[in-house]
Image 1 (spheres, rainbow, N blue to C red):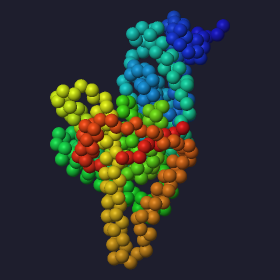
Image 2: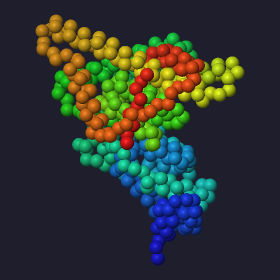
Image 3: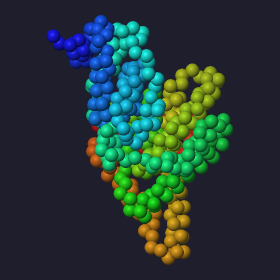
Length: 393
């Protein structure tokens, strides 16, 4: 006779609709001896997801997006159990594991409901598509892992984090502007220093990639903002609108800068939008959806120009300093610009290998003049249009 677990999976996972889930959950609820095997197979589904290019944060994001927060917690429990089998994890994994949501207790609120929710989660995991890998899966050979430096985060990044945290917390736009501007300058110089060091030491490091969630609502504006931040930091961003994330391709120091700055600017923009919206409501306005959309579109477009200008200034200053130093020492130096050009080419080549086919999104126009005006002003205060984001096929 076919085991209960197989009967339940056949009913629930390989058919559509709630009837199959109910049948499978009823079978499992009536047989506590199947509990251990039920969880083991869930870990197996998670392991298959790693092989298809998914990371812990990706799994939780798609479960939260397609199902709900409770099943995101169930997914977190399976992820935590599955990764315990590995002695070494790829870069970025530990930070993602540290941010997993709380795991709900098993068997609650009753055996049937618990089994039904797990089977619904498994149905989603089973149908996840293959996506572009942004690093090796767990358990890869040691030499296949590009581990971060053992000494931890560079002091420069620690300082940048502190500046951006202050910019997000202050209630004074001028202070936020000064702090964010200083952070961007430090990011640009940090990237330039890393590029020159790699050139002098003939480092063989190649561009990598990371994924950043782009969540509703107003995801188009958020994707444009991320694209602007990525471009200004010598990275390429490709948006997957169906799965709710962008893949950013670049060298590791630049990827770190993109993650930090995008998160901070999104926080600052949201705070500014909320304040502006409150002023609109105080004036008697009730409809706010078009205001928010227009605000964020203007915010992203204006920041694209500001970020690009800031990077150009920092690069020009660093190039002039390098030329002066080389001239005074008499040493032959290829200069900063050829080094950066070579890195730009490497990033472009890597992005095109990962995404051989991309399309340009048609961006819905902003229709609210007040929202556009306030969004532009907020971008100026943050001191940072952008082109439409690339979207993977």
